[in-house]
Length: 504
Image 1 (cartoon, rainbow, N blue to C red):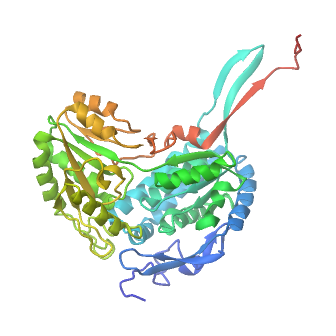
Image 2: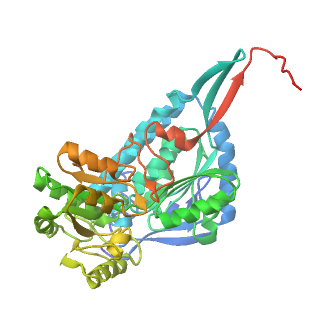
Image 3: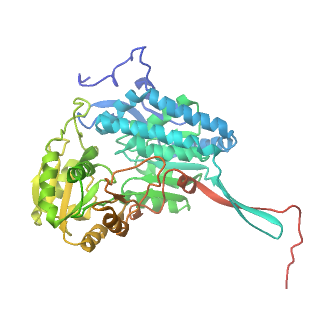
């Protein structure tokens, strides 16, 4: 075993430091009715070193269908659990998460290459999601409608039943929690398919938290799956709702497959988020710190990252100089071996090659490379391009990497047009005087806009989501989760049978 491997791989753990994960328990396993042997095996690999952290199981389509049947039965019992008891379970889950925060930090850092600060933020977010979910069972939901013909009329929000979640690798705890916690809290059962590069962080973490907290058996299943087997999450007839977070291209395929059985589908897709800088921006240095974060946080592998830096021409050169000066201070390294690393390796296979291709394409078409641009093993350095224009991949595609693509503009109307010249509409940031920046921000076609703040932002209590090809209209967070994870049932109540005239 590589001596670089840390205590995640060491066994046994010291008795004074209890751990939630035992590698012998995980060996070839999935979580479905407990930890059981999968139909095949797959390695969990550290992207920074190529080391194998664990070997877990994969499930077949038949295994997914069996899990759906078990979940359907468990869900029928779950809806009858008293709300006070449900609330206690979610509070307990939050406590479990915090108790084992260091262990989970280690997994997120090593499995997806996240810096420690990001891993700790995700743990806090996950804990907040479960605390927020703890309030759901005792919330009032539904609607009293107008009475007619001496009968009462009202609408209820009822669970879908069995739901399926397909989660990504880039923000594994956050994006997993955003689905798992509210789906359970609104009365559903959950079948989770984690991304193949984050099976632990976006999947088995939740299995252990819920198991340790005492959630009912068979209510939650975590089954890694690939290829045709993974399609069972989208097509099994017992699954009534599918939640997907990831690229729009994959989301479209998921929606198409799920539509064959008319499932409710919630898609959170790609982003091409504008970072707009007007010429009356105040606190220039603070704005640059946000620009740095917007492009290079977690090596830009965030759906809300700045896809286009649209900068007023009078500030353009100063902006590039200042951004480059800050970007050169970033430390790009293995975040587990080097706690000072600003960000680590690209998570997805082939991502560094794609970054280099995007840079080469832009330069060949007239863009200027100011910083970076060349890969180093699994790492890609902070990269700044200017003169990015339509027709370049850096303009057209979601970059999903540490490349700041800068374009100058002269008028507010031009900035708005350039911001909206994309099929995506997730997030946006506009910096300038509050009134003017707000006017520009409201004209940008996005599900979220932040005035004098970064586009990368989220919380358990906000309505998160995009428009255009960044999503299909769903929102996640706070009370909007009731609309996302439940369906409406109209009920009328008459005090007794009444005569109904047939008519002629």
